[in-house]
Length: 341
Image (tube, rainbow, N blue to C red; front, side):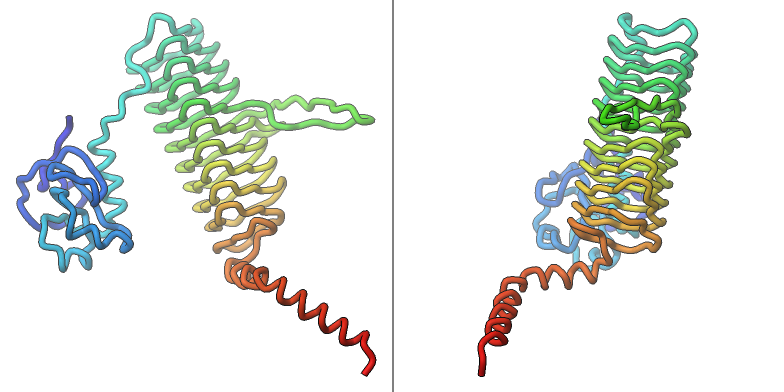
């Protein structure tokens, strides 16, 4: 088990020590459940009441929260980001694969970089290029002409169709499918005529795609997911979608074909985005929002019907609760109008 001293932690996180710098810690935990050999954090005032009761050996705190805390602390600018950094440092998650398993099927034309690990029953197709230290989990299928950048990790049972490119340091979780056909058909007198999906998928560096998510290949050009994008579980990305850098998309969201999503957007879970729309940089969308028109300005949008400015949505939510009262008033007014004086 990996461990770290408070002194080492302060150097890692650029924090100020409050307490004994020689103390050792080996994992992270919540304020409520932490033990003396664990590191915790306070990033939400909702949990402030747990701070004085915590058994954590050290707590990551802002300067403001550290003022009244008598225990051991590391004072940092952003406790939540600091928690993420130290959690990475102490992470004990196993590799997706170790070495190259004897049952793995690797085409003779594939290029396998130094330090690559390939799990049991994985299949690597023709002309595949695997960069250094790539991990391919058990049961994965990597189709022909795929390029996977260094240190990218595919967990078990990921399927990557032909002509897909992944950058460096990506994480693709189990059950994800990259490069499946987009939903492209023409209709001839009631019969569906399939349009071959001849584009590919291009995924940048440091992209994470959740379990059982699907990214369809382009119909003609490519579907593009740019650097730093994070995609949750059960997300559908249709053909020719473009997602800008560092955008986050939460679970069960559906993005229809030819949508362009800007940089630094946050799309809440179970949202739906209609096809051929554009979403500006910096748009935040609440969970369950249906987006049916282009969004040209950054901001927070919410609605389970049609997306609108958040302040307007809040007003309309109040008005919705008043509908019955308004209906009765209108009904009474109409009755009075019909009744002679």
